[in-house]
Length: 35
Image 1 (cartoon, rainbow, N blue to C red):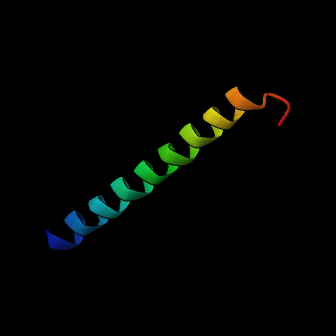
Image 2: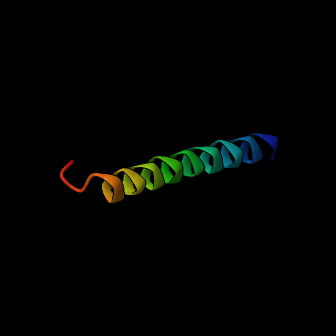
């Protein structure tokens, strides 16, 4: 049980990090669309 929970937490943190990266790229594209 605990292993599954820890893996779920890791997956959630990875997804959150990926969303932050995607949002950051979207902000950069708004500032400089040529990238």
